[in-house]
Every structure is written in structure tokens, then in C-alpha cells.
Length: 332
Image 1 (spheres, helix red, strand yellow):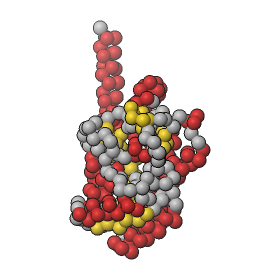
Image 2 (cartoon, rainbow, N blue to C red):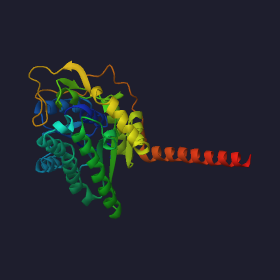
Image 3 (cartoon, rainbow, N blue to C red):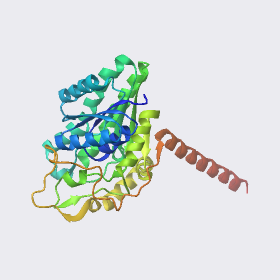
Image 4 (spheres, rainbow, N blue to C red):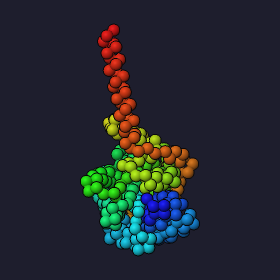
């Protein structure tokens, strides 16, 4: 990655996307900002420029491939070749599956899954002929471990993992120097919980330990600079993914007991509550959500291969120790 890269970020007007724009701006990057709300995009662009970067805000619905590809054209015309593409835009519905409407499921999938596919293809169209570039897929612990009330979102995040794994194999087969990294995040303190569609009369909230968006942004920038197959950010991400590998049935029961009501805040929805599933909530957005007082998880991250290796080594040591103990016992 160049010292002052050209970067595209989807979902750039709020939350993790906005924090990531700030982080790249501090490197002097030229940043294409994609989101749906024009005022929020302009405000983010001003912040990027105050922090030392250049910004091109573009009103874009990532569910529309033509709009995403057109934004890529505009970025390269303004700033030159795209070095890094960050897929981050998302939508969700807090609802039991039995009450989830098909059109809601389609919309969440169109944004959270197809939006990543569209961004990836737009990036590949530019990066493959040059044989360089980095694509970052902002994932989630929920890409490996589904939780109640978020089946639409979890399903889309799972799909991104499968799509990305397939693409990575193709890039390796072709000997391409284009690299793709997934950065899996824990619960984040972002505004999504103030405008997500919900079946309940109370505002939704993140479940588990909460992290600030700036910590996630640091991991995303690190991934753009250093690569790697996957990064797991935060201890709860590693716990959820490894727990799913080791004891999925136990995870089912634990989440059934502990992750349903835990996603519902005590605060009732205000009169005239508007969600952002089909249309953006108007006005200037924010980087942080309503959980500053609870967002204290450190932003440490680990390569997934390292985490799996440590677990495998621990398992091997446990088995070896048990075998030695069994032999000693038999000898006695």
C-alpha cells in the first residue's frame, strides 16, 4: 500500500466506516466515501479533509451494482488508481425468523451481502489489470456464530465468508498480487442501534462486550497495510468463533438463554421512529452510538491462523499429557 493511498469505503457516513475514513485520512489518504445520506457524507468529507486527507463523497446504494461501479470510476478519475477497497456497508432487522418479512430479508441481503459482492467486483475490475490492490471485507463474529433475532444479518455475513474464500482461491490460482482480508469485529458502539428496523417496542442494543469504532478502524488500516487471511478483533470475537468450532450445541443453548432479551434496551422506541432499511435516516450522522459508557473492550486483534494454531497446540498438548498420564497409570 502506498504511503498516501487511494481508498474506497462503503458505509462511510457513520460508525466503523466513518472511523475508518478518519484513520486513513491521518495517513494522508485520498478517500472515496460511499453511503446513502448526502448531508452525512458531506460532513464526513469535511472531517477527512481536516485530518489531512482528501475526500470524494458519493451518494451510493451498494445494493445497486451500477451505482457502485460508477463510484469506482469517479474515484479513479479524481484520485487515480484505487489501492484499497473497504466493504463495510450493512443493514439489519431485529426480528424472530417467524416474524421476518421476505422483503426485509431480501433487502438486508442486498445491502449486507450483495453490497460486498458489488464492491469486490468493482475493485477487481480495476485492480486485476494492474495486478495490485487490497480488498478488506469488514466481517463479524456473527459470520461464524449466528445469534437469535439477527438471522438476516448473520446469514449475509456467513455468505460473505463463503464468497471471499472462493475468490481467494481463484486469486491464488491465477498468481494474482491482489489480496483480500476479512476483519471480523465484535459488538460495536455505532449508531446502527438507533435506526435499525425492529419488531420490538424497545430500541435494540449490542450483545456482549462492546468496542469503540476507532479500535476497529485501526485493525482495518493494519489489514490494508499488512494483509493476512483473517483478523479477529477483540477477545469476544475469538471466543465466539472458537466456541462455535469446539462446542456449537453448547453455544446454541447459551445464546438461547442469554442473547435474546439482552439485545433489547430498556428505552422504548420514540414516537415516529424511523429505520434505515430502505431509506437513510436524514441528517448528519455520528461515529459513536449510545454506548460510550459501556464500550471498553481493548482493540487487540490476532491473525485467525495464529489463534487456530494456538488452540491446536493447546489441544495437542492436552492429548499428549493425557496419553502420558494414561501410560504412567497403566505402568503403576
